[in-house]
Length: 392
Ligand SMILES: Cc1ncc(COP(=O)(O)O)c(C=O)c1O
Image (tube, rainbow, N blue to C red):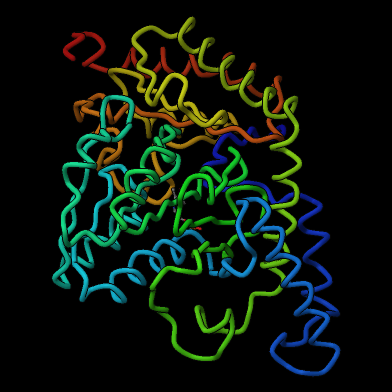
C-alpha cells in the first residue's frame, strides 16, 4: 500500500523525530536511577528538572507545581481522587460534565460508589456547558469542579476562563482535563484560575505512557501511589526518565508551534478544506462540535443512514485511518456518549466519523480523502435500507 493517511491524531500522534532523539540516550547510556546520589544519576535528575521547566512553560505554571505521571488517565485520577480524599471532611460533592473522557467520567462514577455525590452537567447541541447551570449546581459541600478544556471527540472548547472565575469566587477547586488542548491552544493556568490540569505527551508528538498533572501549591490533595519520595512525595515510583524527557521536548516543540501562526493556520485550513469538501460532495451530513470554538485539527461528522464502523473499515482498506468516536470506546458498539449528550438520536450518532489532523498532515492527503470518501459513502448507502427509505 502507498503511504497510509493518518487522520486519527486525537487518538495518538506520531512521535516527533526531535523527541525520539531526545529520548534515546536515556534508554541507552544514561540509565542511572535519578534518585541515586552519584554524579551519573545527578546529571539525569538535572535533565528531569529541565523537562519540568518546559512543561511549566507550556502552561505558564511554576515548575514546582508539575507532577509527572503515566499519562492523561493517571493525571485525571490523581486530580479527582486526590482532591476527593483530601477534602471529604469539607464536602463530598463534585461537578463535572456529561461529555468528559472516560478517565474523568469513570473516576467520578467510582467515587459515587464510595459515597461521593456527582453532578454531571448537560451540554448544548455544540457540546458547551451552561454556565448558569454550573452556578446553580454549586452547593455548600461542593469541593471540586472538573470540566475538560477541549473535547476529544468533537473538539469543542469549553468556556474555561468563565468557569475559572465562577469556581474561584466560590472557593472550590477547579480541575481541567487539557489532554486534547495542550499543544493545540495556548494555556495559561494562572490567568484562567485553574488549580489542577492534566496533560498527556502522546497527544502532541511525545511518547505514550507519560504525562503530567499541574497542581497549584495551595491545593490540598492526597497522593494515590504510596512508596518512595519521588515527585516530592506526590507520585511515588522511579521516574520514566526517557518518557519525561520526551514530554519535555514535545512541550518545547508545542511552544514553537503555538508561536507559529503559519503552522497553526495550515492545520485549520486543511481541516476546513476537508469539512467544506465533504459538505459539497456528500448529501445529508451533520457537522458535530462548535463551528468556531473548536480545536483546529478536529472534524467530527455524522453521515446519515450508514454506520461509522463500516465507513472506517472501507477507509482502512484504502490506507486511511480515522475514528468513529473516542479511541477508548471504539471497541464497543454503543454510540458515543458525547454525541448522545449533544441530543443526537442513536441512529444518527452511529454514523459518526472523526478526522483529526496534525502538523504532519499534507494537503494531498486531504484531497485523497475527498476523492475516496464520497465513493465509499455512495457504495454503503446503496446497500442501506434506511437510505432507500430515508426513514430518519
Ligand atoms: C480528553 C482526554 N482525556 C484523557 C485521555 C487519556 O489519556 P491517556 O491516553 O494518556 O491515558 C484522553 C485520551 O484519549 C483524552 O482524549
